[in-house]
Image (cartoon, rainbow, N blue to C red; front, top):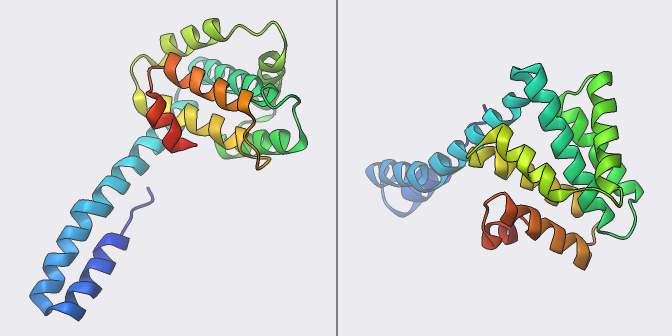
Length: 181
C-alpha cells in the first residue's frame, strides 16, 4: 500500500521551525489527521477496487467487459476514437495486469461500447448487479473513464455529457464527477 507521510513530515518541519520540539509533534499529529489519514484511506479503497479484478475470474471478466465498454462509449463521444484513447486503454490494461485473453475481452468490449447500438442502461444495470453499492469501485470506474476522456488533452462536449450521464446513473453526484474531471 502506498502510505502517505507528507503531512507528518511537513507538519513536523513547520512545527519545529515556528515553535519547538513539542510544537513539531503537535503539527506532525495534525498533518497526519488532516492529510495523511484521508490520503491513506483513499489509497486503500483504490487498492481494494483493483484487487477485485484479480479475486474471481468470472467477476473479473464481467468487470473488465463493463469497464471497457464504458470506455468505448466515452471515447466515441469525442466524435471518433483516436490514438490517445487507444493508448490510454492499453495503459489501463497493463495497470490491471490483464493477460492476453482478458486483453482480447477488453478490446471486444471497447469496440462494443463505441458501436452505435451500445445500450448504456444495460451496461449500467450490469455494473450495479456486479458491485452493488461499492462506491470505491464506482469511483474507480469513473476515474478510468475520466482518464480516457482527457487522454487526448481535449474534453469534447459530448464526452463531458457522457461522463456526467454515467456518473449519475451509477449513483455519483454531478459535483463528484466534476471533481474527477
